[in-house]
Length: 138
Length: 138
DNA sequence: GCCTACATTAGACTAAGTCCAAGTCAAGAT
DNA sequence: ATCTTGACTTGGACTTAGTCTAATGTAGGC
Image 1 (cartoon, rainbow over the protein chains, first blue to last red):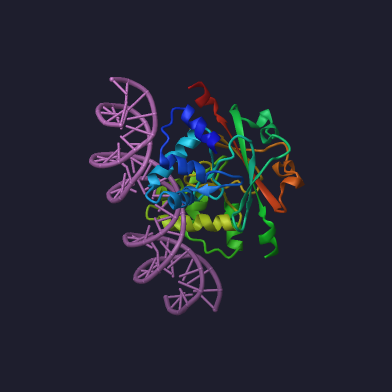
Image 2: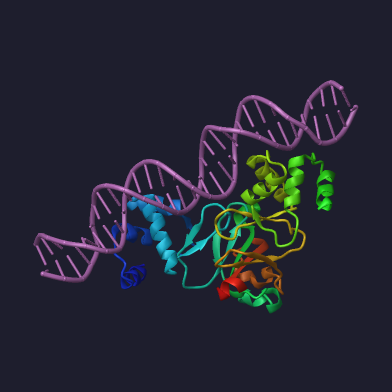
């Protein structure tokens, strides 16, 4: 994650303790925390960190493309640090577990010109839903 | 939309004035209102209708599969009466306009078995994003 | 026309997120 | 090493979207 911190410094970010712990929480594979979960985990290391700071930092990370926002259920947004390897999401309809997945074909290519209504389409995000192994057997 | 009202009566729905106006508001193509928009439009015809009633009715329509919930921006959910013709959504990244679109291939088929992590995947929802014609020229 | 189970209402409540004015501090300049 | 300053953080009030509840109203079977 020091890669990320270095990239941030290169962008002129002031490197504060708060930003550091938020960046550290968002490290790993298949990480999809809500802002409140990020705040709770950050507060374990830096108890006085404010919710507003977590929201600010997450928004900045999203704005510069280091973190993705994922909205799987119309409730709290989730934050996905896996921003440099394009992928989609597979969500369990029962328990909400999320996995990063890579479809075989670019989803954009499935949308024919005749279905684009003159839009300059630049991105497709897919949510696959189904039962995860533990929910299927339970 | 009397089709819908008939299907609802067949299911044993009590047909109230409130449910009727909500169903009438949700009529047409490329309709994707938020709950508040549905409430505002319903209130034009039935001024005393309560927000809670709109939420209740929308949830019921979703539960029985007559209306789809779409979450395009992590803000208010939108309600889509086009539930019997499977489709995906194309959203303008600037103004938020939504169109129903039909990809050439079933998006599910693009997810190889090796990327399913043992899930019983049953559904894929796709949001295509880009600039709509008016936002592209503005 | 009555009855009653189901539907509606207003308003309090919750969850998720934004905004703001005041205080703090990282890092460049000295 | 300290100063300075503009960027960052804070806590709390505020907003938006949605849920819940107890009291009231009413559709539709009789």
